[in-house]
Length: 158
Image (cartoon, rainbow, N blue to C red; front, side, top):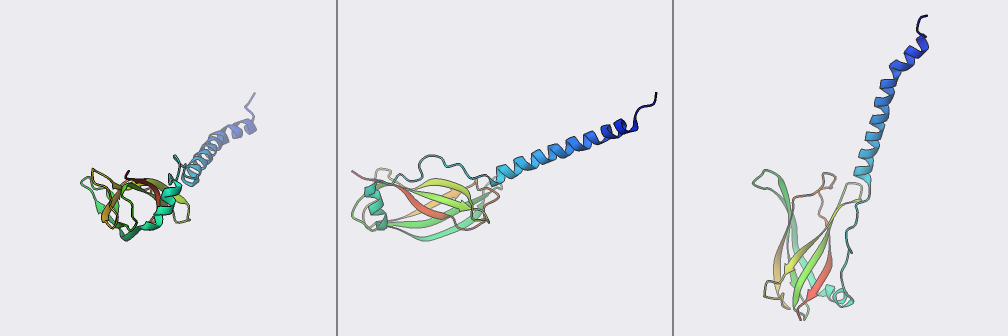
């Protein structure tokens, strides 16, 4: 008895069908990975009511972004600027939330970075300090634009 040609034809399409299913699964996984919302880690703002009232006394100026190559040949994006304490309180710590977006306006990366850290000397009233924030882990989906900078935390000197 000769083999049924319809069974033979079904068997030849099976590998193509399996490859198509695997490709669809891989495509779905890639789609989910790149378009999922970025997970938020920890509280987004640690501003106390006292710190929220003081934010208006802190001024950012001269903020610019530049890209440089490090010794390994990778690109490091730096945000440079100045912060001024226009209030009447000494400050120990100021942290910023840096929010990078993709071309579609979705958050690509959110990172909290300290720009003022007291090393024995507080950030006094009337003082201005320079800051530098290096980023070497920016995602490829970043839109290459200046991130949104939001004061996330202030610690006052006692």
